[in-house]
Length: 405
Ligand SMILES: *Cc1c(COP(=O)(O)O)cnc(C)c1O
Image 1 (cartoon, rainbow, N blue to C red):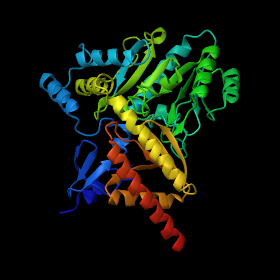
Image 2 (cartoon, rainbow, N blue to C red):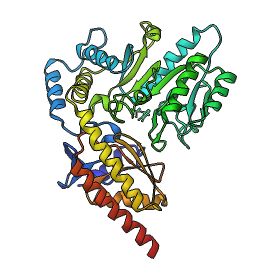
Image 3 (cartoon, rainbow, N blue to C red):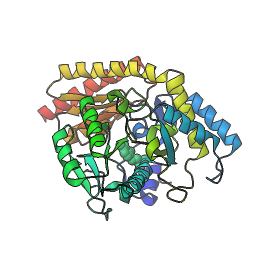
Image 4 (cartoon, protein in one colour):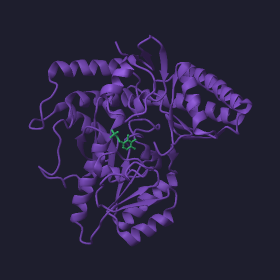
């Protein structure tokens, strides 16, 4: 009998680089493999399991909804979806929600809405401004907005003009707004797969002002940063701005596929029946979990609890940087979204990652040399200390063996 890994290689398309682990179950902040080995999950399904694994409130919501109905179609009113849209707007902007099933689908919905809006303007508006190294999804519409080497170049992307700007340069942005008259700007308040780059609050405020001044839709891609990930419900809220459109996905479904957009009231009726849709949007199960996720975070205080531990984690990582300043050159990010920038060859960073895995600690690596941490908000102080101690030893081991070899 072949192993699961061999069977995967026979029948699953090789679109993902995988870690050599077959997961059997998850509980709290831990995953267990099929040998019973336990791992502290510090990247939570790539920013999805914000409350860890098998959270009792999520299990309860799932069971309750599963005894009602699993799917009904959008011909009917869907109570969990309505309740969730009320919560999402209560925690963001006054407006309306369109539900889809993933991040890329949220971007597609945003693009179609931007297109409809731009058609209605007296002066022609065309195109979308995005930041260098941004990530907004991999479907053909969203792909062109994803400005990472090798991601979009080989595919027949849309003819919507896309203007790429450096973050933190408001003059360059104003120039593009003036010359090209784009319809919208879409940004991640903290760039995720682009390397955990936190946008300064002043920059977000300036960007928001410029969008107002030039009649450009201000869109926040909160797919990775949303749902408490950076310490506030949505990350743009650190900067006290009011976007026109918010994209969400990843954490909101508590582990089930769910995404969508929140649109400010003045644009909320642009889509007419037939303009956009999806069979599942949203699955009642995903929506039921979404309601439970928001309740646990915002009503039961898990966001506040998580923020305390996130501070400890940042503080400990900064101390580690102080101890090893030649290797750890920066600690970036906000809340439970952290990038530890390593001044090492990408191969050595991978080595640290697999050393940590051996010790039962799961971290992600992005942009080759940045260790990305996306821990659950249920992380404990003890787990922070455990991680930091092992992390320090593993960095030292890899650095030493590289010097001597
Ligand atoms: C993950 C991600 C997406 C794409 O979401 P999928 O669900 O993988 O399609 C888009 N934008 C950002 C910022 C993301 O992190």
